[in-house]
Image (cartoon, rainbow, N blue to C red; front, side, top):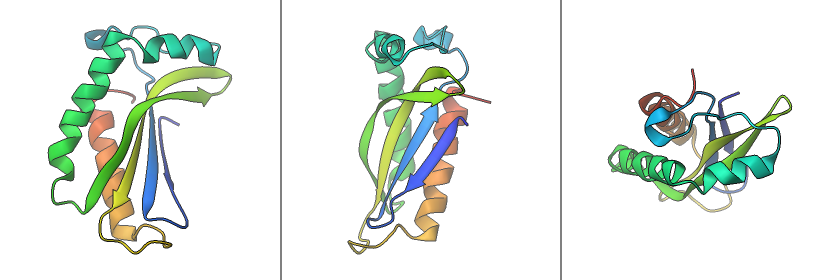
Length: 127
């Protein structure tokens, strides 16, 4: 699965994992399937991957304005899938103004899914 959304049960947050399954030549990310996590580490520290993270964060910024969501973490991820590993993006959203100790609202979860799709599609991370 190229997009995984995991809402927390006791806090108004949700984590999004966007696995990169397609090569991204604009970011010098040609080989995105590796056999060990250590090989993915090399990708996550590359200039191309850092540029991707910066560009995706910049694209997400206006999309979250006035959405009721805040990005509390945005980083690289090692995404396991069927005996292979891929680089990916890890984004944690928090519902602003939500009560502590409760899960994110359904409307906020839907907005998180929309934002994940926006990033996945805009940057061509996967099909």
